[in-house]
Image 1 (spheres, one colour):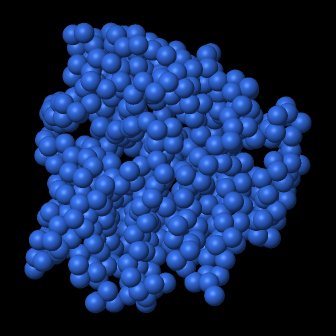
Image 2 (tube, rainbow, N blue to C red):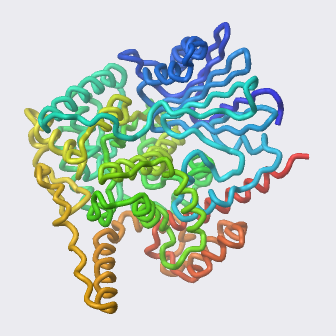
Image 3 (cartoon, rainbow, N blue to C red):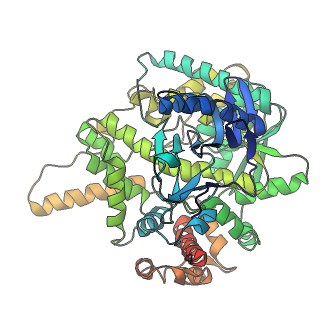
Length: 603
């Protein structure tokens, strides 16, 4: 690697802006609010760059940088280089725009993707532990990537590199998705606090995006409904709510009712077998895969045909601003057996639950790659102190947000960028993220605070009809009711294990309990999701296509022997009915192995 610092920001779809001062050159992308002031482009880079030198010169420079970064709320990434060679790089609290880096004794290189950094390595190769994680879950945990020697910043982190102090950068956290001080008031008081916060945030967004054409993907759930209601409350007028997939889906019907009850336009984009077959044959499909993956996670597919159709209809008539309902107020579903154990749950129980729910794209046989995943998962929890159900609940959410939310769910924004459109995440505002960490578990459970705030405080006056629209929820049937106060009575949710009555009866009872839990947590995929199998059916009926045919078409023979061995048992399984992510994962992994081979070895 060259001794000079290398910064590669040639993202083909997102512009990075530059600002130069007397001591520092700053680069930024995205947008931010600093207080009530909206910043983007060179103004955003200048706002970061102007103050970073002063922060670095403070006696407690790390804390000064943390304080500086916590002044910016929005979706952004930032890199600054001082004349001395010192580097500061940071991502926002949900890693909206990832930053990658690699270094050795010769210097450091940073980039918008891991791929340009492969040419900065002496030898480009796949990290086998990361490959195991990717194969089983579709993503790489923590700061790693699929490529040995290439790392990434996680959400709420900043990098500090000073060549005068050593060859390795130091990584610091300025925000972590873990509770700090819990709110100690009534539910109504917390509803009022949340509503004031939402009003302040959407007031800011109204001043900037109020005249834009906003597109909100509205599902049958709660988050997109809250987002849409707040847009209406703050007089966003040019808003189109969309739904896509199968017309007979319950989500589609609830989406329509939501838009109509508020008074916004509703647009349905129907998907069929032909929709996905057509998309799979477009010349830019694999380009989107690479743009989205970047050596970290499988691409997010579900919105692609809808975005493409909406954009094609515009014919150059300005950009759309997509506002998905991704939110810091969400809480990931905690596995039932952890809930039932309550305060008795341990770190080992938590890791086992994550392995079972997040690393099971190929669950049908004993997987020899799991031990490597377990080792990395253990490292991610080694500093955790789990003493109660609240600790376990918080750590589960922290892991899911740091990994699945930021690297897969929010990474769906790459699709908007790929089609040249804008996007914003009002419900991942920094203030909302910080507020969410004060929510007591009784108000997070089943999104109680969100649901009841929407019904009690937001659905009034012109929005009153929205309260009657049913919503899908984590547990149970769709409902329009408030979440009751006694809803956290978890002991009534899972039948207790019967007393032991001999080895055979005890074993039978345990198997019955596990089967019951499995049925409760494994639901058949919705019909519109199953349609995505046609994206890989090679123009045929998925019933007539085997997994081996698909993998052969996408050069999965480039996978290492041990991964091919894991797939061998599935070679003759029909494509029909498979989780599409389990198909995409080995395809993407094979592409990354080929990419590393192409980058080769220097010298």
